[in-house]
Image (cartoon, rainbow, N blue to C red; front, top):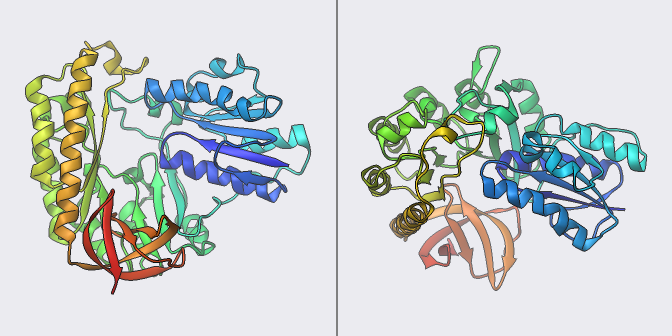
Length: 404
């Protein structure tokens, strides 16, 4: 029997899908993570934007094209927001973003087997995603996720260390809905980092908020044996006025100061970010501040997307920016982000670094450095192993390198 577990959305969704996959394998299922012919489909949905929610609904029809008689199980944020949009499609089972262990129980109820609950995530050869917390208390005015994921809750340090000890991947990715808010029995994210200092694997962090970037936190990261010097520091807008309307709790100037502090501790760090184009009430002057901060900070990568009003959020009641204006601003952001990436990689040409090989395709082994430059080496290397390389030139969406 074959199961397909297909995921839309964030790294947390991917991690939770990997848990479902591992549990199904325990039950004897052959598991795939891409849409393909299968006996059952577990569709993990997203609702961060209206487009993501639309794609989530469309997944049911996409799965049925491969097997019209397959049983379909739905979970994730889109079904948490509105279960009816899936139950009307005649699927076998629907749950939300929380309680995804119910998926395993539902599969056992239909096909038999002893419910084993959710396992640790199924690993790849190169990295293991470790979820340290769930939920968010920030309630940014544009974001529906806190209403779907619930309040913040964190895992015990012992549980996190136990999961990491069982992984044999060379890289650990620490993730959560709001990683910066990690806290269990007065243990902070900084304390957790210090507890990981003996781990002999590359440690990469998921998306961070401004408040966590302090000298104490950065000093703790310096103590890790192999820290991936990439900071995905959420921005959303370069305008202090827009940030206030977004309920983001920092100003443009404060954000830039946090980036300067990161560079003080990690001069070659890559700082990546998210920027929203056309938030409700955003003026051209506000937008120009988002454009200018890209160069001022020196981002290595920018994830830009157009603002999507979500019913139930505070910002939904605000006057929206015309769609053509949003589209134009998004195009300009994407172009500026592409230029920033080229500039960052160009600055690394000639440097010696290491990367973890992931896959061989088209005559090149691909993988990522600690600071998240995609590397292409023109020879076949073993996936999951770390190699020392010298970066030679811009190539495709990253850089060509040779072994050194």
